[in-house]
Every structure is written in structure tokens, then in C-alpha cells.
Length: 395
Image (tube, rainbow, N blue to C red; front, side, top):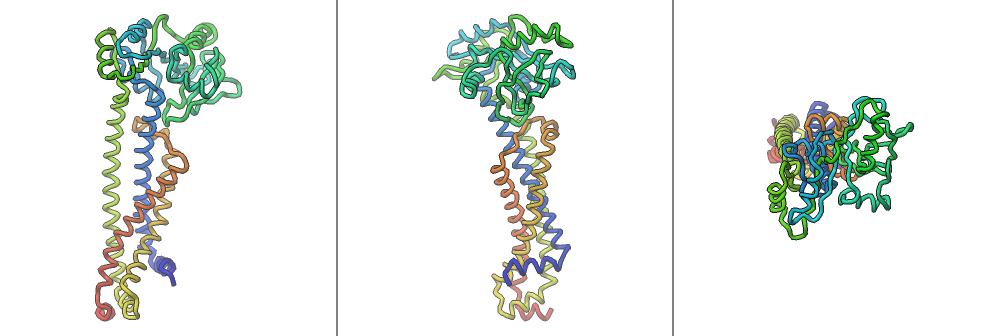
């Protein structure tokens, strides 16, 4: 009889021990996987959003830095305007290699003239843009035409057509997912945005307000060899009424929020692992104490200490594998189904991993459960096998 067969037979004889160890493994694997998904997913989302921004410095109206950061990360509509002359002023600052303006708009909330309510819309200038435009050249072979838009990963064109403020838009392409509400945002050119505003006066429930001679932000790429902090300081000193957000420091408040969430979850995981170790150790200590005569007979019949320890640990591994697999799958399914609720509660987007990475994370959670169960069962198993077989049989 193999160790696994022996372990399975022994498992069926003690339901209490089996359920206790499996439940502990279920909790360990589930929490470890959930923590991994949240921490890796939020980090991936921040990196992708920063990469999509593609700028070294973001210039915004003074006092709107945090609102703009939230809008760009979470896809939340915001209102921020400054004079269009700011673009030329920023472009003239030493160390600035390129400067391109953007406008932040939003669709109406619950209006029949808009296919989607409260959608965050980013308008860019194709003549100067260095973020969306290169991607369009690569993917579409050219710029967006009037009336065309690029959608986030989850933006689709309804059968009746995509309409914003009563203006029909053609969805030319979709961007890669970032894990947040930005996946439900839309990118279009200044020309299209102004045409939407013109048509909205007669076709929409309320017109789209695009102030003349105003932009929401200026994306800055610094010259090669220039120092970003020096350039940012020069922008603040030379351009009145603006604030700057450095790309490496962008979303710092969200990073701090992630750290707080991570520390809280890590504490819960640590306590769960510790309690699981104690619980499994107590359960196997009780089990080995009850079976000390049986184990003494094994030893007297020639079973080695290694064989006896292996059979007891094998039980823990089998139970942990079953409970851990269930816990990991339950955790992965829960995070997937409640993705939007989790994003809303923690206030930070996270990207659900691809299938291969998810499989790797599941294995990590399963391995954690197996290691905890093995550690919990190992000490009682070693202790009982060190008893003299004759003494054990007489007890």
C-alpha cells in the first residue's frame, strides 16, 4: 500500500480531522491568492496607466492635481480648464522637448442622446500628441478621422450606434485593459470634440461645454539629458496659474492607499497562517496521541520512523491540497465576480491577470496551504515516532 493510499484510508476514518485541516488550508490558500491578486493587479494597473499617459510631466490648472490624477486613473469625469496659451508657454520652457494639450470631457448622465452615461472623454491634439497618436499609426496605419474615436477595453459600439450628445461616433479601435474605469473611457480628437459640441446645441438634452481657447492639461516630454525636477521647477516659475505632476510621483496617494490595504491584508494573512499552524498542530497531536498504540505496532513490525512520519504528513498534504484547491478557486472566482465592488471599496483599480498568470497565482496559494499543513503535522508526527514501540503498545 502506497503512502497516498494509506493516507486516504486514514482520512476516511476521521472526518473531524479531515474537515479541520481542509478548512484551514481553504482559508490560507484563499487569502494568499486574494492578496496576490489585489497587490499584483493594482501594481499592474498603475504601471499600465502611467505607460499610457506617456509623459514625463503633466501640467494642470493649479489646485486640480489630485482631481486630474483620479480622473486619469479611475476614469472619473472631472472639470479642469486653463488658457490654451499655457501650451506655448510650457513649450518655451528650457528642457521641454514636446508639449501636447488635452481636454477632459464627460457624456451626460442618463440622457437619451448619449449611449453611455457619465463616460470620461479625453480629447487630444493629433498635430502635437505623442501618446495616443503613435499607437494609432501602428494599429490603424493613420490618424483618427472626424467622427472616429478610440475606446477603452470595455467600450463597445451598440447595434443602434454609438452616440455622444446626439453625435454619432465610429469606434475605430480599443485600447488594452488597465483594470479600472478608464477601460470605459473614450479618446477622440479636438476636431471631433468641437464638432460634438456644435451638434449638441440642437441634438442633445444639454449642450457639451467646450470653452473657447481652453485646455485641461498639457502633457510634457522632456529633452534628452534634461532633469525632470529642474524642468518642472522652471514650468512652475515661468508659467502662472499651473501645477505640475511628475510622472514617477503620479498616483502617489493611490500607492499609499495600496500600501495601507496591503499591510492590513498581510496582517490578516499572517494571523490566519499562524492560527492554521496551531490548529493543524493540535489536531495532529490529538490524532497521534490516540493512535500511539497503532503506531507502536507499525514500528514493532518494522516500519521505519521515516515511513510513519511520511504517512502522517501525506495525510496533511492530501487534505491541504483538496482544501487549498477549493479555497484558491473560490477566491479567484470571488475576486473576478466582485471586481467592480472591490475597486469601488478600495478606491484603486486593479487588473485581473491573464489565465497563465492566474494559474501561477493559484499554485502559489495552493503551495502556501500545503506548506502550512505540512509544518503543522510534521512536529507531532516526529514526536510520536520517537517513542519506544514497546512503551507505546503498553499504553
